[in-house]
Length: 129
Image: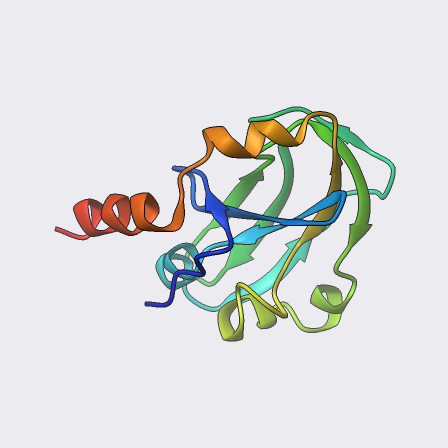
């Protein structure tokens, strides 16, 4: 399993990647594996304000519907419209093509509270035992 070192992670398996003044967010490789084939993604409205821990989207797979939670406080400034026609991009490329939203954070230091790649890798290893 590939865990990008330039991302931070939540224990709910969202990833966050700082890109200039914004943060790109998606679900981890582990999460998409656990979900199975993604068949639908509900994307939020651009301009929506979200709080850390708030559900802003859900991903539907052949197994379940899972809420996606914001890892930081901020405003959604972009959504990955590609996922409406191609939700399987989350399975194929969760850290590149399968991103969900871009958030302009209220306080980017919130990212520091998230798990670094090595800590997330250890967390996932524990879950997999």
